[in-house]
Image (cartoon, rainbow, N blue to C red; front, side, top):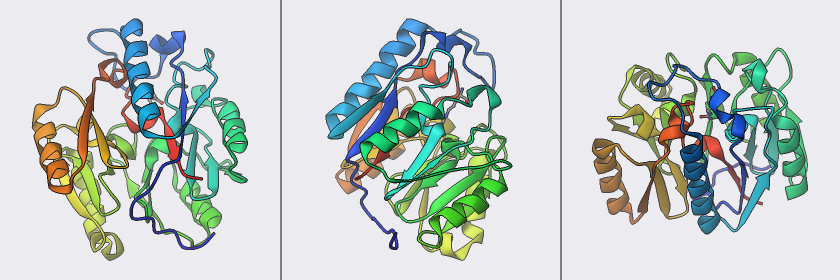
Amino acid sequence: MGQIDSVNQIHTHCLVRGLPISFESSLKERIPIIPINLKLAKKQHEAYIDILNSLIPNLIKVEEDEMHPDSCFIEDTAIIVGDIAVISLLGAIQRRGEEVLVREAIQKAGIQRIYGIKHPGILDGGDVLFTGKDLLVGLSKRTNYEAVLQLRDIFNGSLKVFSIPVIEGLHLKSVISTFDSRILILGACQAGAYIADEIQKQSELKDNYSLIFVPDPVASNVLRIGTTLIMQEGFPMSEKVLQDLCDERGVKLIKLNMSELIKADGALTCCSILFQI
Ligand code: CIR
């Protein structure tokens, strides 16, 4: 693989997976005060898929997996960068097995070079942020440094793999995502501030990225598809920051209510794997 530097990633394909009826038993950092409303969760997830379907030419639906309540969070099972896919060894033992049908779907879609994270490495895709240039990997309860070493081996210098500790919350992408390949959106919270410090400390990162903070950590997980930015509905202060940014750059902002998925620590990026062939 040559040097990757796609300033504007054009996603041609997208993998999603239906929300199972068992979703109420999904893993949760905290038990929600108001329990998950399954019907609403399904509706919100379907609305998410509909939007992706309207923005990306090839949407691939992986068969639902009732045995794994978290399986709609497909992002965690694999990362795809360029012509390489890496299948996760999921950090949560209960989630292992979700990756099997995802691997098949990736192969069917035409990605030929498929690797896997091996023990003692563990990795959740939610900890891997591809900026369009670099791979930032969160060291969290779900992803370890051994996985970072394996990723460096797999990408073999074709892109830089940086590791960044995640000091609270679930994943790296719970508090950071990309607006574009030069602008990163961070949550104004302890974990977000720590990540920003780490970025400032490493000159290769510091010189390449501008950091924009949004007041609500949940709203820092945005999904950029072409000239559209999708954010979570219900965070007016963060919306103002993102709307201004979008207006300056000619990007359309769409809001999606994902309240029921947030209760299971899901964000916007976690329900899809976007790639280009
Ligand atoms: C979990 O704990 O694994 C799920 N309940 C949430 C996973 C969210 N994944 C993501 O944001 N990439």
